[in-house]
Length: 85
Image (cartoon, rainbow, N blue to C red; front, side, top):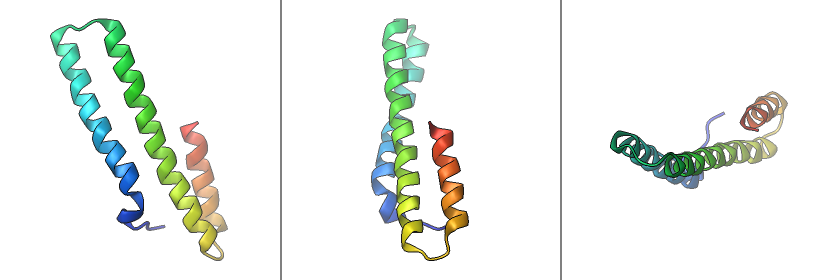
């Protein structure tokens, strides 16, 4: 199923922020920063990444609900959703 990129702008924006966070975490590692600070940033990046995934799946499920005979697509999205949990 194709989803219009404009429908996923919020997820994309979140992923761009995660990309920046990951760069910051790598820099922290290179600088030998405190492990507690690293874990805090890793947790934040992980949460943001999961939320972006949920946004993509939710958008896809909403699109499937609008499309007749999309049971196969809906099952695939449900499986993807469960893999995020």
